[in-house]
Image (tube, rainbow, N blue to C red):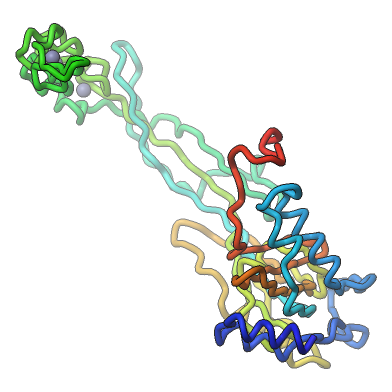
Length: 363
Ligand SMILES: [Zn+2]
Ligand SMILES: [Zn+2]
Ligand SMILES: [Zn+2]
């Protein structure tokens, strides 16, 4: 391995990468949770070995890259693994499930004879939507028209005129000739110029859109010059989420997006109207991770109210690999028990076109 590391140095590892190198062969044991008071959150035990060896990470990368019979997969197949580290990341999340309500005005053309309401105003938070509310942490949007809120107003697109200046010819009754691009001349195959037949050399043609009337009916009010406006209640349930991660690796810069959707083991799970920081008597590490997450709780917008919160701490197995292929170094992460792969600087472009693998046939 020393040789491999030396090789990595020779082919030019930047300082950030060097920081990873001494950390090879970190322990792969999660914190011992048997002593931890988990309160309501039932911890699931860490099962099996999560540690990946060189053959396994190479196989995972090859599966991810695909194209195993062409040059696209060559760095994955033949690249040299110069660094491999298995470690655990601990992610603390605080999700805030909120209900947001707002009123929007919807407008449509006025049709004569349509009953116009009284323009009633509602306190939107007095509406009872309990029967339609979703399960906790399930997103949903509800829209419904508020009764008796309709009122008739002049169309704001045509200022109540019912018609507008033709947008195609700008009221000039003629538009640019598309055939000659308004030049009036057309180039023939022998490069000589000839008069455009479509516009008789004028460069403009009569406007089809308005039929040379220069004005057209307003499409917003269908020419009626009036609109019916009504209030529509929009109720949205959604989850705001904050996450903070710490790792057992000496490299603390594991990108957040790598851990964001990783499947980990839940070590703590608490749901309450407002979660407090979890206290782990045997682990300052977890207590402070929890405190940091709770302190960064998402801001509930003024148009919304919080319904409940869920605070989870989970452990995520992470494998970080640096590979060298020809004169390039590239790195990738394998995260979670479902082994998702994150590669940023893979040296060969993923092939989207015709290649000898014919894998593009599947797309
Ligand atoms: Zn109009
Ligand atoms: Zn026109
Ligand atoms: Zn023309």
